[in-house]
Length: 282
Image (cartoon, rainbow, N blue to C red; front, top):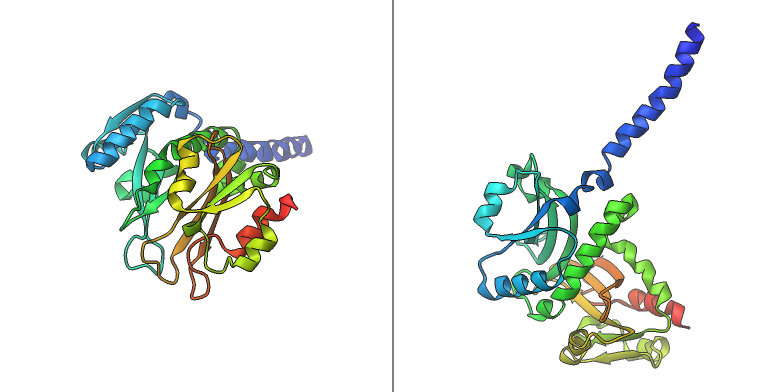
């Protein structure tokens, strides 16, 4: 009888442990997202706030939303009835000041008083330089809002999306062999030489100036991926650079990589990025 009891316990314990592990996963923690109110935090900059209000009103579809001020966020952030979409600043280890600005979606709850870093992060998308934003981020803002929403829904379905982050979407580039790709010249690292371009770029890949590249986004060009790079205005060794390719029409993320800035590798798409992006086109 004792052996039977021991056997039963040995069977139950792994199941209980598995259930406990499931309860603690990110997918489960954010499973209430669509039923909770997302507070879109305005930062007091008139242009940013107006643009954010317009784009959220036009595009936000996955949860009820309300706008709030930074002061209201400070009051409400401990309340797990709310999620918060807000602009945040990121400072990496060797930086003396924040170098990048992010669009971050977090869940309210206990521990928020210790700082945003202690809140449950759903997604954080590199948005712009912290010190001197170019303004280009507002051209891509509709795409960023859609990327955040799509990633949130996928994270509610699969833990691999929630824990893997935006980098998981780089697998999409393997399915983009017949799509056009438009690079802003400023998004290419100086190591992407004319020799490399002539070898790797086919007739479907264009390098142009920033304004013309952005026009593809504004025109919702079909079957076209457009480059976007986020890096500090004055990067130091140890800063990070983020590189993206975004579908101008669907706003699907096809490529998302980051690299640490060193003496050798500055901001922009590196030769290794170009090799990855073009590998499935040849």
